[in-house]
Amino acid sequence: MLEVRDLSTSYGAVRALSDVTFTAATGEVTAVLGANGAGKTTLLRTITGLVRAQGGSATYDGRELTRTAPELMPGLGIAHVPEGRGVITELTVDENLRLGGLGRGGRVRSEDLERVYALFPALADRRSALAHVLSGGERQMLVLGRALMAEPTVLLLDEPSLGLAPRIVAQLFELVQSLVVDQGLTVLLVEQNARSALSIAHRGVVLSLGRVVVDERADVLAEDDQLRHAYLGF
Amino acid sequence: MQQFVNTVLGGLTIGMVYAAFALALVLIWRSTRIVNFAQAPMAMVTTFIALQIIEAGHSYWLAFAAALVAGLVLGAVVERVLIRPVEGKAEINAVILTLGLFIVLHALASVVFGNRYRSFPAAFGIRGLEVGDTTIALTGFDIFTILAVLAVMGLLVLLFRFTDLGLRMRAAAFNQEVARLLGVRVGRMLTLGWALASLVGSLAGLLIAGGSLVHPGYMDAVVVYGFVAAVLGGLDSPAGAVVGGLLLGLSLSLVSGYVGSQLVALAALAILMAVLLLRPQGLFSQARERRV
Image 1 (tube, each protein chain N blue to C red):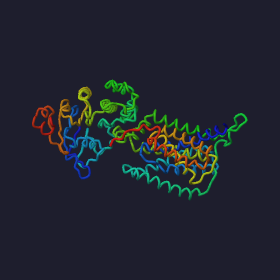
Image 2 (tube, each protein chain N blue to C red):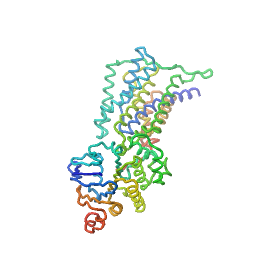
Image 3 (cartoon, each protein chain N blue to C red):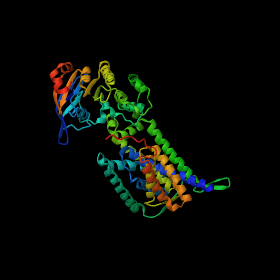
Image 4 (cartoon, rainbow over the protein chains, first blue to last red):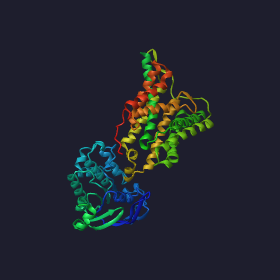
């Protein structure tokens, strides 16, 4: 269980997160929704310590994360998957994946690589290609596969659907859902694409100007016309 | 014909040294976007350490190894003490610091080692090899120079291409934030990068010094040529640095042999200008678009 409590931070004088509190239950997808600039990406970055928290906490299995160095996250089973541009374009597909496997400490096992290639056959065809040449969808698969190489228990996904065709988004979300069902992963899914996100989420947290304005079961949120119109725009 | 062969051989040898020096600059540039102007005096200091050891009566090879280790340590210390505190600020801060270090090391070397010319021995003969009944301008030490630089480059390729550590180092160089999220200790990788660069620079310093005279400023011209070589190859590309070094060594040797040795510095400047005008990203850099 990932527990975020009264988390606050700011960029200079601009408050980016104000007392954000919610819980992401183990083995569930928690969607974090909201408009551009609502603080969704900042929330993930604050949880993993890329941005300094000015108050509050984020704990996973009793361990305080916001004051733990980002480079220790893989060791704690937490994979922060940045937006699609998080691929290291100067490295090959294979090297990107290996790098993910190193995060857990120890050597990269080839069966782990093959497991990820089996999940993403498109990547298997381009192992030794520079990530630079991949399409947007392939890059998103690569960052997701790279995160899985470290065998995380928590996935923090930052806008995985950004810039992707609807068909690719559907595939990607289906895959995330199967990971949750098969491996019991805990997923915090930051999305602007609320409709798609809620289709696989158990719970939806809506941020507005750095505050939690809705924290509701996903199916309830998707059905509630008022909430949808007010915050999600569909 | 003989003059041509000799000019080319001389160019290749000095080109290997420029290549090593350019490589030292590139290793630091591509991970931190800093041109380390102190590379030359850092190499000078480690060469003087070797000279002290030799003059104390120890073997050349002990001194050689000690200088390389000193280079490694010096690079790491400079990164930790000088560069780390200004990390994350504008790169110009660090560049100015390396210029300051340049001056400080110069001054310290003059005080500690003496501001005069001292001769530095060579490990191998510095007489030209005899081929048939003519002597060519390739000495035993030249061959050692070429082999030593090739060996170090080969080891670096092995490290960067085929080891987990090398993969971590490259990741840290290309994308610090993503590397951190994947568990890479970026700070350590940067320290190691500076240490390795400084080691390669020290090697260049030792090779230039061999069989010749050293004084606190003896490497200063090399930093210019090394920089031109690095720009020629594309500052981002280690392979480019090597090719750039060889090309520059050859060109300057040909200019020196056929036009006049007083024009060498001018020719280096002309090459730099031509590269910046015609192909500013260098010959080998994969010109990457930068997102704004």
